[in-house]
Length: 58
Image (cartoon, rainbow, N blue to C red):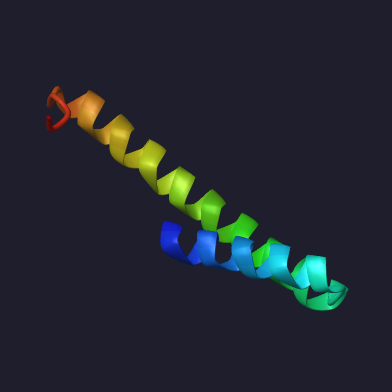
């Protein structure tokens, strides 16, 4: 999922550089949404591991 967020971020930067404002805005919003979902899932998984008393994998 992080791969999708980074892909849309790069697409938004290229579109913004080339002057395609509408495409850049949509891509940035998608990247922001995917990054937020990824971050939320990461924090949820970390909290579950802490509550279960498991050590993180090394």
